[in-house]
Length: 282
View (cartoon, rainbow, N blue to C red):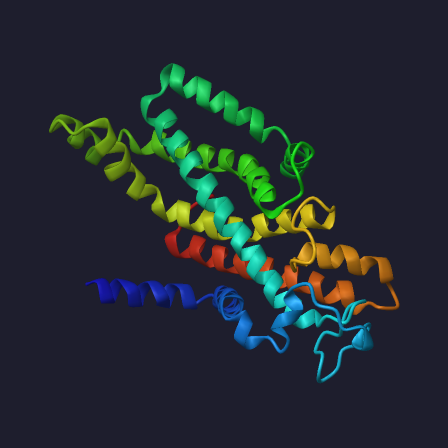
């Protein structure tokens, strides 16, 4: 039965070519990031490396995306930059999703004063533009990858609280929840074993869509000098540093910018495909 479900699910997913393209883009980027040490032509260029004789080389068969002002291969640094971006996205969502989901479940299930307190705090956070909130938090922190993850996490959990809150309110009056209450199931069991699994489709879809947006916000912080610091390769930092040499040395900012576009587009296309597959509203 599971095989039939999987085959039907894949058939429905594959009917949208853009979703398949998104899955391919994300899969390729993830694999390249994991095996970056073996796939990149110059893995040593991801660190504090200097090769002055080969600085500012245009794209060629040796340096696919050219080299920067101190001779580092742009292509190799972009692949390692993908690793940094994916790491940022995964950690941020690993922090934000459990917090937001738990608060949404509690507020939606119990209601009353708990609902009012949690959701009013959530509304305050949601009323502030995400990038502005992240910049405000980073103003008090040292610009590092860890602090960037903390800043983005602080602005991301309310979206999950709002989503799960709405789903929980609609599910808590369903027959299977009422039946669990009648047989004496605990609140913990009902919340995390009955309601939460029925929110999983919407949760997975939103996580996939949010990966692209988290990476974009992280790159924006790095572009402004508040995220990952050199010599660690980061796409936003590369765009920022390369923009100083436009239009002559265009490859220093154009290729990292396109790299950001590709990974965000890949996650968005994949998320849209999952949204259609699960038939959910986000």
